[in-house]
Image 1: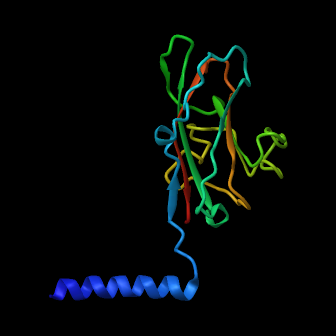
Image 2: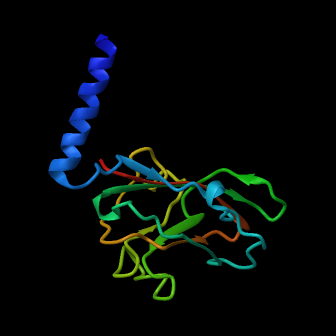
Length: 169
């Protein structure tokens, strides 16, 4: 009986919060499930030169209010021409979040731009922070619709995305 009362109390409290606010609480984090969406997470053809592009287009994520997220964690693995894993380090891979993939997908030379709310030069290296648990600070005003990875090292021929998580921290 006591357990039923606790469940009723929790349910009633959630109902009151939704009724008074008119919205459901924003999740503390949102991780893109690439496998569940059927999105390829690794470039199929090997990069042929430095600064080659691997662009991933995101679908719409209705119900997720991206402007409430303040940080993003992005992780990836890197491979050489033979498919051998490369130890992540600085100056190997750059990542850019993009609002409109038909617009300027590279943004300014340094830092974010109007269509590129995040640009990080060191994915996986000690000078980068986007791959860490706390992630990089990001100020979003809409849902990013794409992510661009570029090999800043000619040794990197394949990039495989392992995580993209938006956080409320």
